[in-house]
Image (tube, rainbow, N blue to C red; front, side):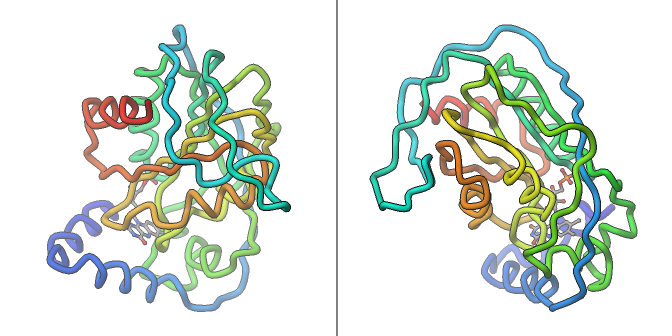
Length: 237
Ligand SMILES: Cc1cc2nc3c(=O)[nH]c(=O)nc-3n(C[C@H](O)[C@H](O)[C@H](O)COP(=O)(O)O)c2cc1C
């Protein structure tokens, strides 16, 4: 239903994306009490053999080590090892894209599950006091992730997916970024949204993670097809 509301909003405001973003930010930006919570768990699901390794070097938005010296960005790590798709998805839209990526890449799928699941009420972005809105209004909140911390041993490439909340990454993604060691990995953000772009969310995550070679991410609409996803993956090199 919320997705439909966003789609409706998108239609109404289609002639003015900046206005849409302004409205989203206005709705999400009010200061409110922190509402820390949840954690994630794992639901590895995966499968087949990894596909051919990308050879090109898409734009890196942050690298490891974290650049205290201002050194130039490293090239993405070679991806001749295993591929993982890690995703947080409150209502299933981003997970659907993640599953397409995993199928195309022959990747494992890991679902970032909040220790405290988000209810419909929690996700009500019309209520500035709802859990999601109070979390988004406080950049220090780190909702807990269920299960053990993700072990990325053996992977060389990780796709990281999430919905856009208030024009940014959900705070639980900050938890995820800070809890993983992406050393030696190429990390590729992706997201879904009603209309907002990926914005600074991928860069924000890279800054939180401190490790890994983070590439520019990609925003998909809710109805992204496998062909859309395939085209993007091919564009990565
Ligand atoms: C709390 C909250 C805030 C949202 N903020 C935005 C936003 O700023 N811009 C936007 O285009 N969509 C926004 N959305 C819509 C979601 O990004 C969109 O429905 C997304 O595809 C949901 O993905 P999921 O099903 O994987 O959770 C928001 C949704 C929620 C629940």
